[in-house]
Amino acid sequence: MKNIFTSSNILIILATVLLTGAIIYLTPLKHKNIIEPAIDDILPTEFYELYKQNPDDYIFIDVRSVNAYNDIHAADSINMPLHTLFDQRKNLPKNGKTIVLICTGGRASGVGYSYLEHFGFLNLRRIEGGISAWDAVDLPVIVN
Image (cartoon, rainbow, N blue to C red; front, top):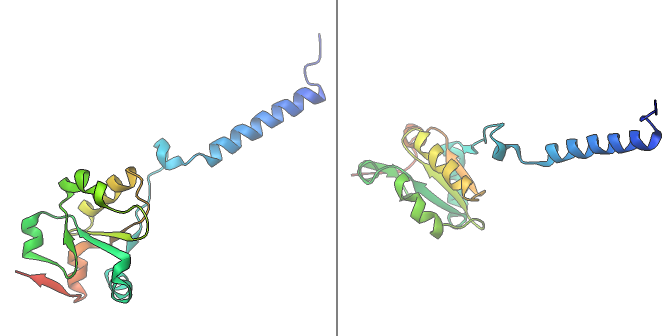
């Protein structure tokens, strides 16, 4: 019987194992349904301080319904209801500005975040706790 474990065969096997490991390691796992992508949350007070310094660096989007937005919304936010993101994503920048999403408590803006991320937006943040947290720390709101 011939010995298949020659030094050249061992090197080939080792190289194959290392290459396979490298490919697995370097493949973005969030796109393989192995791990859940993380959402980049920011506290309302932290965002507001950054926003006041450079408002042109941000697009501040409230993803709630028009009625909810009209009742109360964070000052300087624009209303872009969640169901409109399919069309509106074509008008949003994928770089140069940070898109910050807010909703009532964080769920809807999380959906919007994941949706936009799916379409290649990497410039996203979400207000932790939504408008509820924003209002609780007395940041400026518009109430109708």
